[in-house]
Image (cartoon, rainbow, N blue to C red; front, top):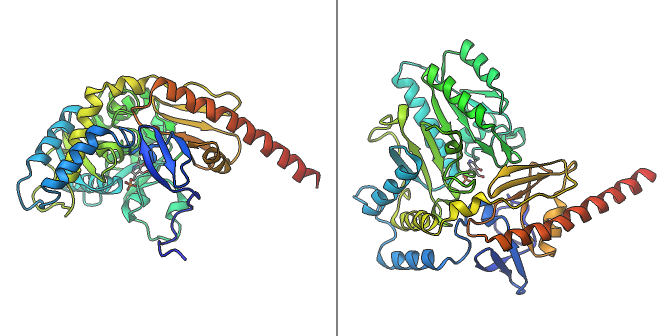
Length: 390
Ligand SMILES: Cc1ncc(COP(=O)(O)O)c(C=O)c1O
C-alpha cells in the first residue's frame, strides 16, 4: 500500500530519465513529451547548461535565508524586471503562492486607499491554485466543494465580457483589482481576445484598479513573447509567475509595477524558502538560455492543426484541442503510443511542450496525436452506438 496521500489520479507510468523533449520509463520505453511537466520544463529535460549551473550551485550554497543579502536574488529580479517591464519581485515557491501574494497586494492597495473591504474581479473557469484564497478566486465549483467557507471579496464575471466588468464598475465601489489568466490553462485553454484585454486595462485605468495578469501557466515565452499581455501592448500592475521560471526547480514570483509598486513594505509578506540560491540559479540560467537560444522565436511557430474536433485554440506552444465529448482515456492511449500530454476541463487535449521543441519534433507530436484522436473518436462512437442498441 502506498503511503503517498491519494490526491492525484495518476497514470500507471514512472519516468526515470529525460533528454530534451523525450522521456524514458522504467522499462526503457521512449515517449515524446508534449506536456513538459505541465509547462515547467521550459528548456526540456537534462539541458546541459541548466544541469551544470545547478550542480555547481548546489556545491556552493543552496539556501541562506532572506535574513541576509542575496546577490543571486538581485540578479534574478533584475532579469525578471527586464523581461516583464515591471519594478519589484517577491520570490516564493509555487504558483499559488505567487497568486496569494498578488491577492494580498490588491487588498493592501485597497486598504491604503481607504477601502475597508476591498473586492477583486475574477473570471469564470479561472484557476489560480488550491490555497483557500486562490481556490476562492478560481471559478471551479469542483475544486471549491468541501472547503467552504470560501474567502470573501471576489466578484465573478465571464471571460471576454467587458460589459460585465463595466457593470460591476458602475455598482461596486469596493473593487480594487481585476485578476485574469490571459489564457486559461486548467479551464480548457480559453484565450482572452487581445481587444478584451486592452479594454479591461482601460477600465482598470479609469477606476484606478490594479490589472493582475496570472501568467503562471501561459507566461515565460510559451506564446512567442515573454508574456501574453505583451501581445496586447500594455503593462499590468501585478504579474504572478511560477512553473517554467526556473526550468524545473520549484519557484514562484509576484512581480509588481505601476500602481502596485511600493504597496508591500517590510513585514507585509515573507517566505522561508522564497528566493533561495538554488531556485535563483535556476531562474537566471533558464531566462538567459531562453534568450540566448532564441526560444521565443521557436515558440511562435505553432504545432499546426488537427481536423475532426470541435475547436483548436491557443497561442504558440500552449494549445488546446477540444473534442465534443469527455476524452480522459486519450491520455492512456497517448502513453501507450509513446506520447505525453494531458486532458484538462474533461474534453480538452492540452499540449504544453518545452520551448526547445524542434520543428521536426512538433510535427511528430501532431503525427502521433492525430491518429490517436481519430481512433478515440471512432472507438468512442462505436461504444456509444453499442450502448444505445442495448
Ligand atoms: C494559471 C495558474 N495559476 C496558478 C497555478 C497554481 O500553481 P501551483 O500548482 O504551482 O500552485 C496554476 C497551476 O496549474 C495555473 O495554471
